[in-house]
Length: 326
Image (cartoon, rainbow, N blue to C red; front, side, top):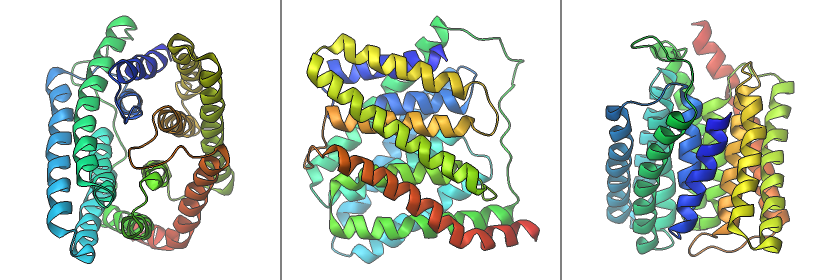
């Protein structure tokens, strides 16, 4: 709990002191790394994270520039990459690696439709944010060490069979692709919020999730977004960096305390905290080329992303279950 709260706060402090425009990236990545595994990443794993970001963003940026004149080919290429990433996730690939690839291939092409310079800036900030997140995670484990794990121990993810993972990956891609087509063609950078929330939901929601769990996911996203907007208003009134960081820390304690209890609701609080960091970061430093959106607009986008994802998944549930049965 303390590691999660400290990591989000410290990473936000780095982004604020460095005046990073995409301030939500470092704390969000740090929390995702900690949530993915209770063990401290070793040096090789820590170096792998920035390396994956560097390669993914460069490839995504190059593809966006080369194929911008032919959006259909660009979207097809993005769809293939996203399908492979969803497949890798369901086969047990490290969640943080999947997240980095998906952020690069969803956000960079969208931002490129606004400005190539802003897309290059985003790629650079994503790389630096991944480095800051890795350092923050190491520092968090050093300050708040946990019980040592046996050598080679790692959290075991429930890998699906090849056929089942393929079918789930295709269905997840079918859910995400309409958003990508709409936003890339429309060229609205503020829609990154919807893309990020949708990607997080697709990685976390199980295909057998019931209505009660679906409602809990929606409420958690709403709670995270609402707390972020209120926190932003408090920050504006106080105009004090320390109070801002204290607000992030307290939110991290609340969400983290419920996440570390485990159980089927744990991922819900991780999603809620991720939404909190995303919305608060965008409120503090609006996206270049975007706008400082109103409270109602931000909340509406959270609701839209959650309802769309849950609704679209319900349409492809039969495909997933059929593959599982087979």
